[in-house]
Amino acid sequence: MSSLAAREAYKDELTKLAADNGNIICLEADLGGKEHPFQQSYPDRFFNLGIAELASVDIAAGLSKAGFVPFFSTFASFAALRAAEGVKLALGYMGENIKIVAAYGGVSGGWFGTTHHCLEDIAVIQTFQNIRIACPHGEAETRRVVQEAAASKEPYYIRLSRNDKFDSLARDESSSCRELLFEGAVRSDAPLCLVSIGEQATEICSRIYQENERVNHAHLCYVDRDSLKRYKAELQAAAGTFLVVEEHRAAGGTASSLALLLPESQVYSHDCGEEWPIYGGSHADVLHYLGFGYEALTRQIAELGGDADDF
Image (cartoon, rainbow, N blue to C red; front, side, top):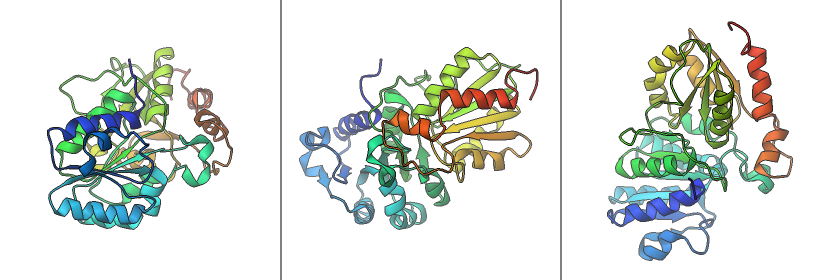
């Protein structure tokens, strides 16, 4: 059973990895908490850089040039938007070995409001080529993504939520999170495949998969363009119609990318719409306000023909 939220699992896993890798540096933008485990274990490799995201990415670039492996954590909205120029140049163009861990992805900030919500980050980062984009689900998958990021020399953007705790979908111990993960056996007679990205989406899709024998469920952890290309053949074998479920806007989301990669398939999106998330409340409250969730998704499936013989 999961005991930690993804962003806490990140801190714990990075601290463990740092024991065997003296080049790992932990950078924070003043949201790591008073008892950050990395700071307690390796104070000489922990730096709270404050509210200076663009400068933090530049500092991370310098550390990378010097042979270190910097992990920089901040709100997704500030990592992908406020620091966009630095991400574009240092990670996309220069290809520096920088790992950005973007917590509070989507509207997981709840009461923090529109300035701290982020429904555009995947679209922004996707345009900066050569960056791995990971949206892990649950503690176990988050830990594995952090391990993969630390072992890789590629730039990473890891999108996390806030405080929710989930059990990751079962994955073979030897498999990478870069591999496409189908929940259960692929149903050859199911005309629709739900494609989930992120924690809330994966929880919703898993519930529907258990209830509706007319659907398959493919969970994507990595959603950068190169990773999506690798999934193409497996997805096409699973169904001819896809409904991508993602806590993001439709514009520039994963559904858009898959539609270009799968021109002979029907690709639809269940997303957070075009409204600004101005409603104050919990994560679930804001998602409901934006029309994202189990009830809305089941209605969309029915409208697509999920209860009929064909789509």
